[in-house]
Amino acid sequence: MATILDKPSGGAARPARAPRRGGQARKTSRRLALLLLSPTFLVLALVVGYPVLSGIRQSLFAQAEGLDENGFVIEGERFVGLDNYTALFSGERGEAFWNAFSNTTFFTVTAVTLETAIGVGLALIMHQALRGRALIRASVLVPWAVPTAMSGLLWRWIFQPDGVANTLLGQQILWTADGIASKFAIIIAEVWKTSPFIGLLVLAGLQIIPKEVYEAARVDGASAWQQFRLITLPLIRPALVVAVLFRLLDTLRMFDLPFVLVGANKDSVETLSMLAWMEAGNLRYGVATAYATVLFLYIAVIAYTFVKVLGADVLGDVRSAKPKKKQQKKKEAKA
Image (tube, rainbow, N blue to C red; front, side, top):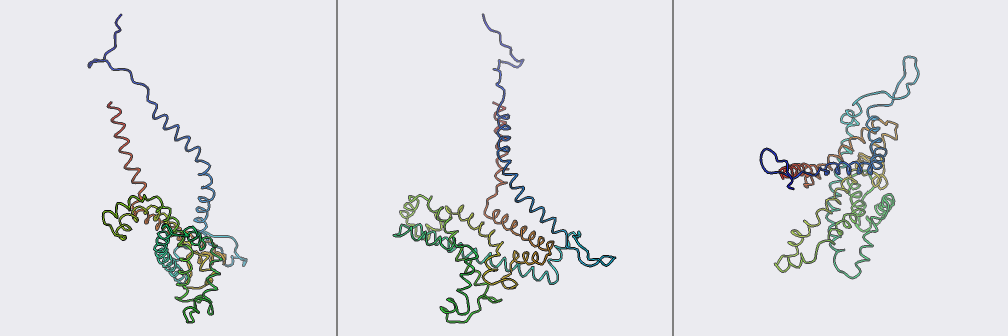
C-alpha cells in the first residue's frame, strides 16, 4: 500500500528535521566551565579584588588630626574625597611625586631596553652548538637566581668608595650617594640581574625554529644579519613580547633594589613604590594608597598600550569571530 506524504502547499514533501541540540550543548558546556572556574574566580576576588577595592576606599580617607571643640585629640579617619590625589600634584608632595615618577620611568625605559638587547644576545649565544653549552646556560642563570636583596648588598659592596668598581676605574665615584652616579648603579645592578630572564624566554623561542628555515635562507644567499632580521626576530616575537612585558611591569614596581643598594630618602633613586612605603611608615595611609593607586593605573595604561601597539588585540579577535558565527548559522538555516 502506498504511503501518502503530507506535502506543503508549495510543492514536494520535505523530511522532518531533527531537533537542534547544538545550542543546548553549548549552554551546558558554558555552565560546566563556569562551575569549574568558580574556585579560581573566588580566590582572585579575595586576593586581588578585595585589596584593590579596599585600597581605593582607603585613598579617599585621611587620618584625623587636631583637637575637637572640647580640646580632645581627634581620632579615627575622616572622608576627604579626592584631596589625597590632588595633593599629589602640587606643593612639596607634588615635587616628590614628579621626582619619583620620573625616576620610575627612567629606570624602566633604560633598564628594559638594555636588558632586551643583552638578553637576546645571551639567547643567541646559548642557542649555538658550542662546547660547554650546558655550563654556559647554568652560569647565566646565577644572577637571576640571586635574591634581589642579596644582589643589592653585593653591588653595594662593589660600589663602595674603596670597592671593586672604583679600583678598576681608578677614580673615586660616590656610587651610593644622592646623585647621578647612583642612577647608573641601579641600572647596572638591575640589568645584571634580570637580563638572563629575557635571555631564557627568548632561548625557548629560538629552540622551536626549524633549522631548515635557516638552511633555505643560506641557500638563497641571505647574510647573517638578514637571517636575524627577517627570520629570527619575527619568529621569536611572541616570546620576546611576553618577556619585555613582564619586565616592564616588574621594573615599574621597583622598590627593593634601590632601597638596599642606595637607601631611602634619596631623591635621585626614589621610586613611586618607595614613596608609598614612606608615607605608610608615617601613618598617612590615605596618601600612601593614593600613591599606590596612581602607580596601579600607570602600570595598567603602560601594559594596555604596549599590548595594543604590538597588535595583540584580543577583543578585536573576538569581535571579528562573531560575524562569522552568525553567517554560519544563516547558512545552516538555509540548508
